[in-house]
Image (cartoon, rainbow, N blue to C red; front, side):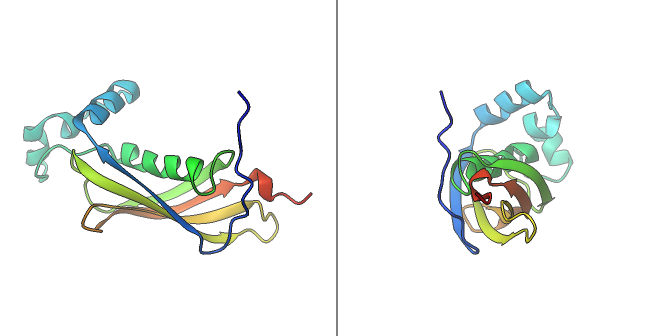
Length: 144
């Protein structure tokens, strides 16, 4: 099947968001796929020994919500993730609703098909869980 790319022009300041509740099943599946079986994700006792109130979701799994947001909404299908600067600010506990938000910050002057996008994930209380900036290639922004 051929990829149906978005053709919408992006604007500075344009925003989008995507939410998901990360479940125990998500954590188990990610651990099995990635091989990251760190007890902090699977054992309440181990997590509590490290000062958490329970098991936490893998940071990279939480970050994956940003990938879904960029790849499916803003800029959308056909864009290419080129890089991500990230800071993990708070733990994400299992069964927490996480909302990823993206905002177009700038386009490169020399290559306007490359954008910098602010990326943030928050919990249901709007506490920042992670933040950073992504660099994405937007093929449909190329000069004709």
